[in-house]
Image (cartoon, rainbow, N blue to C red; front, top):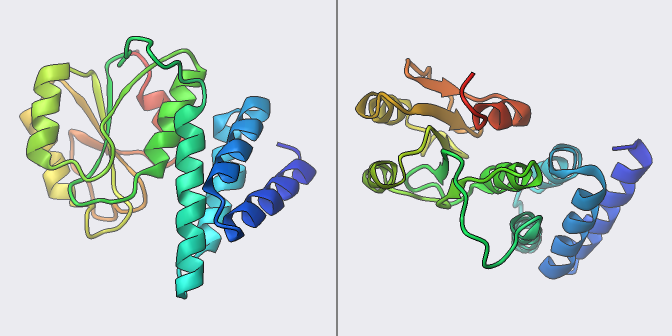
Length: 202
């Protein structure tokens, strides 16, 4: 995205969030994603704005929630066709157990739809036992588990999960995975890496 477009997007989304107008945030996310694509909007606009809100006081927490909710809505609407049969394309996305935040997975799902691909996105805070059940039912090729904080990024649990399902590629996404990961689990360090991991086998 051109620098001037990014600067304008920052100003417009920030103003909408300050007004606690999540619907306007969503509309702006849709507008910019339609022009520049999800990856560019997520990395150049959404991530910097989210990182700039630290929740230092009650007012900023409310603004952060409005921004996050608006971004989530915009990403979820982008390229979605209501009533169309769900395509998973062998990809399952889920937030780690007790993890309340997984906006990054909403961005991945939106980018996959943009590419004409699909996924099964089960949202935040999926217990490990429920994730295992979902894998048995959906039989995905790849599973991406998001953790936002080290409290939920339990490396040993992800490794154990991967060993329980040897035919599934298991990935850790998000900043919460700070402990070393042993095979078969793999850490994803960028948005492009996450999209590549969700692709077909080589």
